Each structure stands twice: as C-alpha cells, then as structure tokens.
Length: 41
Image 1 (cartoon, rainbow, N blue to C red):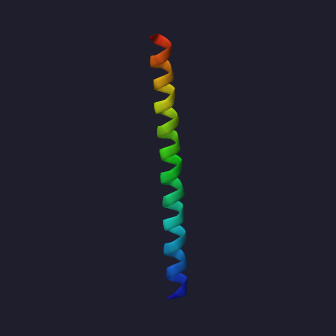
Image 2 (image 1 turned 120 degrees about the vertical axis):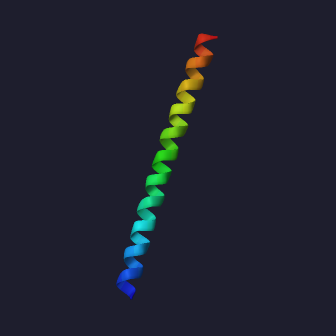
C-alpha cells in the first residue's frame, strides 16, 4: 500500500513541476511578445 502511495505522490509532483515549467514558459513568451509590441509602437 505504501509503495502505491509513494508512486502516486511522485507522479503528482512530476506533473506539478511540469505544469510550473509550462507556466513559466507561457509567461516568458507573453512578456516577449509584449516587449516586441512596445518596441514597434
């Protein structure tokens, strides 16, 4: 039983870190596009 819980916890942590990484990339992309827009104006 303990083994299954540990496995679930590890996958949950992995998906969370993956989500955070994706969010960081999204934020970086949005800031990049914003700076480009401001440079054009």
